[in-house]
Amino acid sequence: MQVVVTKSYDESCAYVAKMFCDLVREKPDCKLGLATGGTPVPMYKKLIEACAKGEVDFSRVHTVNLDEYCGIPETHPQSYRYFMNTNLFDHINIDKANTYVAQGMGDAAANAAALEAKVREGGVADLQLLGIGNNGHIAFNEAGDTLTAEAHIEQLTESTINANARFFDSRDEVPTTAITMGMADILAAKKVVLIANGPAKADAIRGLIADGSITTHNPSTLLKLHPDVVVVIDEELAKAAGWQG
Ligand code: GLP
Image 1 (cartoon, rainbow, N blue to C red):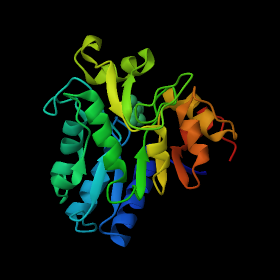
Image 2 (cartoon, protein in one colour):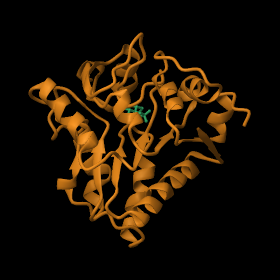
Image 3 (cartoon, rainbow, N blue to C red):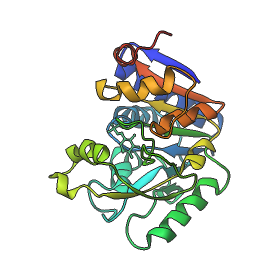
Image 4 (cartoon, rainbow, N blue to C red):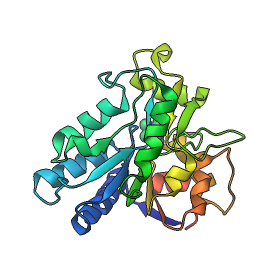
């Protein structure tokens, strides 16, 4: 695992945006694994800027997103499909038909099976973007005694519901279940880049980068099983996580 410590969150976003732009330039028909949450938003802005300047061309790129809330329609401002459209897809020259965000409405088992199929359709992701939850969850693979390999429906923990409540009008509106790629789906990507920022992530990041231990109680630690993972954090978070370098 490579740990990149930048001077600032903005620099972290620039670093990750460059990874994506370099890949798309090198392989114009690449497959990207994308993520939601507040953390990648400024990184997506940088991709939009690069595209507007003609520095990168997304016209042949395919994408698959990690997860989606259950029970809210695509048109809901907090659905991850809506998030991806408004934070990225609407502003770059990607063909939306080549973007996939799991369905949160309807037959949950069928939706999970459809996501599972998309993970490998046309090959696995060349680069998978990840954020991290305060409890170390990646996508919506929650911390607990067990983890799931394949795409599935996950019961969200109190920690995650509380953390994500800031995006909703009230905590009661936060969905309690989500459809998510499983751990094997994430680990199948050719390369993984995780970006994190802020003191709330310090414990989770410490578990991820401090040593070689792996625990289902911090799902991000399973990334240690992957041969090509880059963790991008700023100095402040590195210090809070006790990173010695
Ligand atoms: C959600 C998403 C994760 C994301 C996490 C952290 O639970 N499913 O993919 O990493 O939130 O989000 P934030 O970046 O807003 O802290």
